[in-house]
Length: 266
Image 1 (cartoon, rainbow, N blue to C red):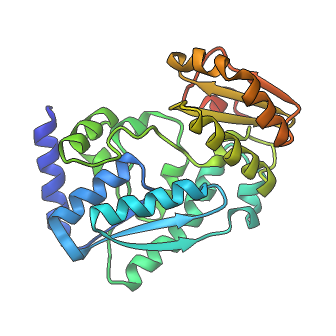
Image 2 (cartoon, one colour):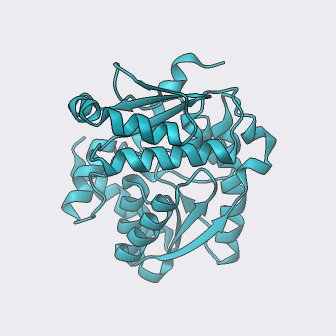
Image 3 (tube, rainbow, N blue to C red):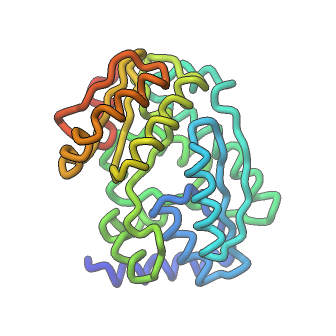
């Protein structure tokens, strides 16, 4: 099916909801869904953003700015992920526990504001990946219209660009917890190391970056097109990451790949 019929099915579905809350992160998927929902429902649309230790401050502020630009009403809820041992202990289904925590706060908030339906930005491509958080979504009754109508990530970017959404080409940015190998404890200190390290790398001009935290070893993933830039800035990178208390700094020759820590699950 081409994009246009899928887009129309999505719009029809949203219109039929009459009131709709969006689980909003500021990424392209949820931003696109929020933009379409707001364009159709106006003040009957709501975006809910979850703030936690695994969301860097710059991403939090960027999400707020995106919601403001869209024009949709935004509510922010804060959760303490590290107080939950099922998250902090970092099992291979950690994402399930994170999403359960977030949705268990988000859904009641939506209901209290008379929004009976909550939708998220899960797209059709996500269904073929290892995403234990999808189970939590289903358990909490959160719907995924983008996936329902078979809309892929590439199609979301095309539609977002056509709609003038500024984040249409924003690289994916999963939570910082995903940088720590399963079975290794997640701590506030580790998340701060990752956040500060990735911010530094992005400021160098690297577009898609993952700083994987392996104890005293930092493993950097970037796209192959950025290999030369990474090597040109080698000394600066080593000095910065050592200042963040990493002893060893490594460059992954396989390059960036989403969910690389799933390659060796417990």
